[in-house]
Amino acid sequence: MAHTALSAAHAAYEARFGHVFVICLDDMSPEEALDQVLAAIRSRLANDPEEERCLTAEELRALTRGRLSRMARAGAPL
Image (cartoon, rainbow, N blue to C red; front, side, top):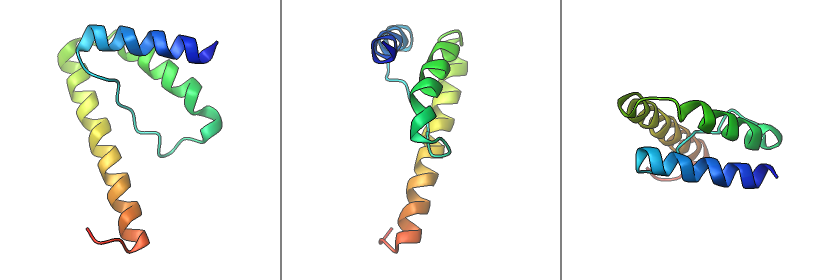
């Protein structure tokens, strides 16, 4: 049931904002991720497009920082 609700929320988000929902889950356990994503997407659906654009950009920056940090710790070439 949660996956169906998540799919519907993703569709509503894309229809409202014209792009996919972006969220950084780096500090979240796998057990809580689904509920947190669903809560976040429902909450962010109420944002105006400019506010959501700013939040999406921040989530993308967080994703990038996390990936670069993991690559640096692993010794991968940047």
